Image (cartoon, rainbow, N blue to C red; front, side, top):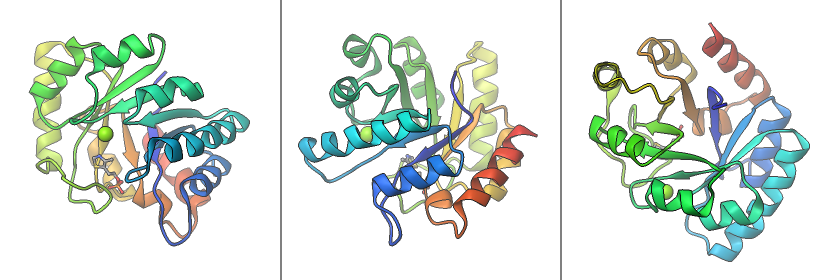
Length: 207
Ligand code: TZP
Ligand code: MG
C-alpha cells in the first residue's frame, strides 16, 4: 500500500536526518524517504542503517532516495528514483520486491515510468522550493489538473504523489485534482510543532 503522506528527510537548524526521522515517527508519520545529498555512499549507508532501525521500531515504511543498492543492503521498503538516477526497470532487477517510485514532471514522464513498472509517481514541483536543486518547471495547480486529466484519458491509475513546496494549506486543492497523496519535507521538518502539524495534515488528507 502506498501511503498518502510521505515525509522526505532534510537537515535544518533543528534536525539531522536521523533526528528528523525520529521526531516524525514519534509524531505519527507512516512513510519516510531518506534523502541525503552531497555525502559519500559509505556515509549514506551508515545513516541508512540507522534510519532502518528507527523506522522498524515505529513500523514505518522507509524509502531510500537515489540508491537502489543501498536500499537493498539495508532492507528498505523501497527506493525513489529521480531524473538522473537508475531507470525503474533496471532498479527492479536489484530489488524485485521493492516499492519503486519515480519522479515525473510531464505526462510523458508518467507514461514512461508506468511502462517501466513503477509502483508510484512523485509528480512535481508544485511550486518553487529551496529543498531541491535543479528544479524542473513548476506545475502549479493547473499542471496537476492537466496531467491528471491526461492520465484518466490514457487509463493510467498509478498512485500519484504531489511534491515540491507544498504547504498544509495547499493540500485540499491538490487532492481535488485526483492525486493519491502528498510528499512534504520543509513544511514538516520546519514546523514549530511537528506532532500537531502531521496530525493536521493527516486529517486534511483523509477528508
Ligand atoms: N523533488 C521535487 S521537489 C522536492 C523534491 C525532493 C523537494 C520537496 O521538499 P519541500 O521542502 O516539501 O519543497
Ligand atoms: Mg535522485
